[in-house]
Structures are given as C-alpha cells and as structure tokens.
Amino acid sequence: MGNLRGLFAGCLLALGLSSAVVAEDLPKLRAAMLASGTVNWEISTIKANAFDKANGFEMAVQDYADNGATRVAFEGGEADTMVADWIWVAYQRAAGKDYVFIPYSRAVGGLVVKDDSPVKALPDLAGQKIGIAGGPLDKSWLILRAYAKKKHDMDLAGATEQVFAAPPLIFKAALSGETAGAVNFWHFLAKMKAKGMHDLVTVSDAATELGLDPDTPLLGYVLKGEFVKAHPEVAQGLYKASSAAKNLLRTDDKAWDGLRGQMNAADDAEFTALRDGYRAGIPSGKPIDEAAADRFLRLMAELGGEELVGKATTLPEGVFLHLE
Image (cartoon, rainbow, N blue to C red):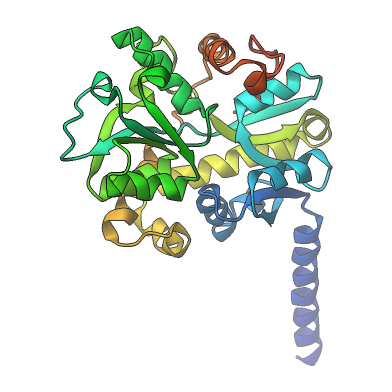
C-alpha cells in the first residue's frame, strides 16, 4: 500500500511539474498598453478567463502612461504589440516599416450637444465654440468637417471657434456650457450622454454619408511583420483571444462586474453607458472592405495632409492582417 501511495504521489508530482513546464513553455506576447485605456477591459477579460493560454500564448502586459510611451516600447523592441489606429500603421508602412494591424474596435467619436441646446443641426453651431479632444488632426473632427461640407456646404472649421484640450477638460467644458458642442473620445462621450447630452452627428452617420464603411475598425493591435512570420500561431492566438473576450463582454452582463473598478464610472448610468458604448464598438468580424479603407485614407490625406498620413496617400498593401 505504501508503494502505491508513493507511486500515486509521484504521478501527481510529475503531472504538476508537467503542467508548470507547459505553462512556462507558452510563448509570451509582450503587450505595451496605456495604463488607463479602455483596451484594458478586454485585456483583463482575456487574462481573467485565460483566453490567451487557451489559444497558445501568454499575454505579458506592460503598462505605460501615454500612447507615445507605448509606441517607443513597441518600435524599440521592448514590446511585441500595442494598440493604435490603422491610419498610423499605413503611415509607417508607407515609410518602409513592416507593421500590420489586427482589428480591435470600431468605436469612434461624434459631436454632442446638451439635451436643452437650441442647436439642432451643424449650421446652428456657426459662430459658436466647439470643444475638441485629440487636436486639429483628430480623425473624428476631420470626418465631421468633410460631412459638414458635403451635407450643408459648410466650412465647419471656418464657421466655428475650436477649443482643443485634453478629453477631461472637453468633458467639463461641454457639461458646463462653456462650449456649444463637443467632439470627444468615445468613452468620454458615453459619460457625457449619461449626464444630459446627445449626439448631434455621429461619426458613423457622417462616414456613411461620405461613402465610407462605418464598420471599418479604426483601432487594433499592431504587430511587426517579422514577429508574425516568426510566431504565426501567436498572432492567430491573439486574434482568437481578443474575439473570445469580445464575445463574452458582448453577451454576458456579469462579465462586466469585475471591470467596474477600472471603468471610472461615477454611477450606474455612466457604467451602463460605457458598457453599451464598448459593445457598440465591437467589429462585426466581417472581412475589412479595403476599398472603403482606401477611400477613408484618401480623405484623411486630403484633410490632414502629410502630418497625419505621411506618404500613405493611398492604402499600402498589407496593412490589415487577415486571420480567421
């Protein structure tokens, strides 16, 4: 009996060691992430449910204070992936860098006004202040300018006064009435709508009016082509882990309970608005319409110039990594 017990204990020990070895042997994906970014809701879901390990890799998250720092880490080889928009990836590819893009989110901004505002359409903003997060080259702002020109023959930039500031300041200025309208990042807009503001024009509606595809994901995970060639299974695993996390967050309200502490929601209304806003930004999963993406890039080149798109006046080949 003692020998059997010893054999059994030995088998358990061997199995435990084997599991530890397997875990250690999983390739690590070093992810440079904005510490306060909404992508962390997805990353936390991936880690909490072991969607990374289930798909053959281990995500090792490295937090940074701002997007510039994540890019330095990625470009300098300190990280294998980060989150950026595909316009930036196109810029880099046109400059000779082999970066590729895996879709993450199509959540974009819009222009909001207070519920009691007399502003009912863009022309009503003439002569008034618009608060804009992200600067003069913010993509939502550029799309809204193009929309105003086409829909109303209005030079939105020339007809209004723009106040450019950080998202929290735009949030406060709009709620206080300091500005007549605001263009902000989607998660700030969600909170603003929970506090008595509404969409005047969404970027999605503006994009449709301009003949673009509103389903084109703007944000995504960026990888280097050489990494994908060396570790195709990790790139595939990242795509699958991301999809699994999105599917859970789309369908299960309880999956959000553990995220609430990260969401900086002041109350239940803000929490619900943030959750629903995230869900609205989940890509459909359909293949990206590269012709529509090319039209989008050409518009960005026309309005934002070389400072925004570099030499990428048309869509460079290979921007979007095709995975299933």
